[in-house]
Image (cartoon, rainbow, N blue to C red; front, side, top):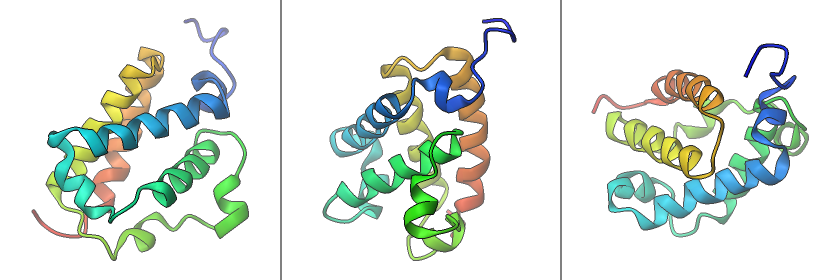
Length: 132
């Protein structure tokens, strides 16, 4: 894809709200199904319904689309909102692997996927609140 063909926002590039929802749903489905993501799943409690909606709302805005999350909750304050949860290296790595698998399975453009992986990796590492 040439720079002149690149959509204005990552949100447009992904394919809008329906595709963001598909990505988020696949992410949480994988977390629920794959033993490789068991530690990550444990952090999320009994149900994933609230997490699904919050990640969907957040990603829409973060990718350059509608600010659903901010309209509902204000500034995301990601680190502060995640402090009650144990996030170490294993949880970080499982989150990144799960999201990477979800993006691949949902057919996110490889160029965009590479950019998102890089952004997600920095954020996921910043979210760590325990050493291991």
